[in-house]
Image (cartoon, rainbow, N blue to C red; front, side, top):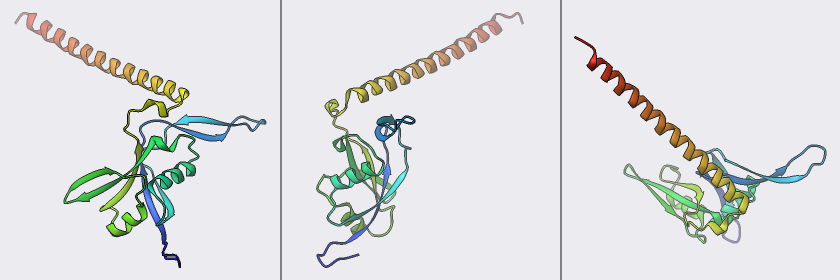
Length: 175
C-alpha cells in the first residue's frame, strides 16, 4: 500500500534459524507476579510474518522480531540474511543494517523461493556481546554436547570390541 509520502507497507516472512538460546522477558512466579528473564531455544525453522514499511531497515526489522518474541537479548547479536535460489543453487548473504527488506522482497517478485529472509546469530566471535548468565548457559550446553559425543564414541568402540571378540572366538573354535 502506497501512502502520499511515497512510503509503502507490506509483509515479509522471516525464518528463525537460531542455534543458541535466547533470553526472553516474561512473567514468573505465583502471587508475586514478578517479571523475570529466562533463556530457552526458539523453535528452529519457525517462520514469523512482520508488517513493515519500505522505510524499515534491517536493524529495525531485527528489533521488531525480537520485540515480537519478547527477546531481551541485544539486537546486535543477530543478523538478517537473504536466501536466494537460482538454478537449483541456494545462496545466503548477510544484509547490511541499512538495507530495506521490503524493497528487496518486492524487487524479487512474489515467489518466496526466489528470495526469503532468515534471522541468525552474528558470526563475529565477539563474546563481549553476551551476558555472564548467557555465557554460563553456553558452557552448560557445550559440556552436555561433549558428554553426549563421548558417550557415542564409547558406545561405538564397545560395539566394535564386541564384534572383534566374537570374530576371534569364531576363529578359535575347532572346525
